[in-house]
Length: 122
Image (cartoon, rainbow, N blue to C red; front, side, top):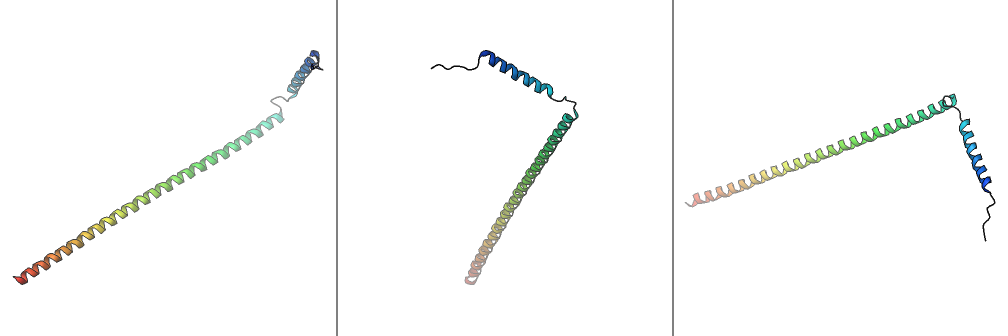
């Protein structure tokens, strides 16, 4: 079965030409760029764009402030941790010194006890 095209070449060319002329007519019917309605529409669009950019800049500034706040909090936490570690080190050092002093006192007491015992014998 063969497909019969109901449109002849001239019909298709005419439809194409008509579409082209309608597009051109729509283009020519547009108001000029200096028309007050066009200028008002452009200024309204510009205001919307400016407001959008302002909001975006505000969001970015807020994000940067939050990043700085988080960095400051992290730095404060790091410093607090360093201070805690240093305090633990100093406490351990003081405990070690106290333990050494206690051991020395025990040694001295044993020495004095031996010396006293030796003097009683001798």
